[in-house]
Length: 334
Image (cartoon, rainbow, N blue to C red; front, side):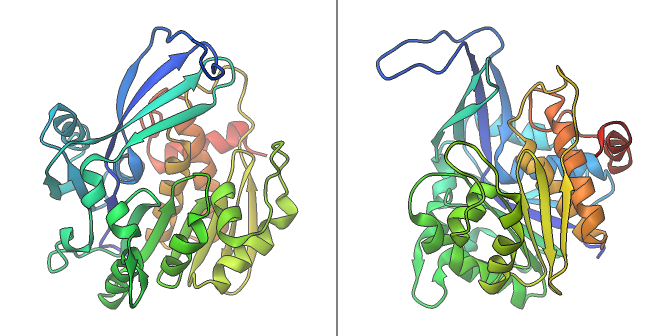
């Protein structure tokens, strides 16, 4: 593959508020110093990570940036990378934003999301005649209301979009947002029938497949990862199914081969922020897919890119070239 990757869907501004602790209902907590603003979402995070992993890779962004200061900020941040084509980014409405509450004690995050112009993004906003890439990565399912809407033929409008890409000879990749509720099987399953690369976390995989991967008390069941990946293939994934979580990444190829890679053992004080780790892992997998690397190398790059992201407060600033982030494995790999 040498045509590059299009990242489509959510373009978001993340405003991160460090808080002393998470308050109970009707209680107060203090927002401490260090409020930051950064780009986020499946488009901004993933495409920026890819641009940093490979400054020569052709990348196309497709999504909505609002007619506001936040929209200007989104475009200025992605515009720092000459290999990102912004010609398919449209301006309309208000830029989507997420208020991220980051617990100083636990480093856990809670997200409050305003959809803004992202709510209207759909198949018609992609210039299909101009789109000439190997892979279309789109996300997040469950956070793009127009594409989550039902379609009488394909199940959802997202599934219809993915089918159109495949008909055009473009490989498809999806990501999903984590949420509680019963929408996963209804909205994710139709898309899987037209998905070549499925890259999701353990909670999203659990809600999509019904296979228990993590208990409510936090206990992980790595022994169930293979069954969950097999289920994703049975639901329609064609090429790679990948599940990531803080402890490890697991993948399966179309021939049923199962791979696992533990996350890096990072020293105390290394982790500065977790806001972009999942998108960074995803970028590592997509880089490997675009360069036709085998699954074991893809997972290795995924955990290294995620670890690089963790070294900075913002999502992508810690990510460097693929060769550089892989050096983290020599230091912290297990």
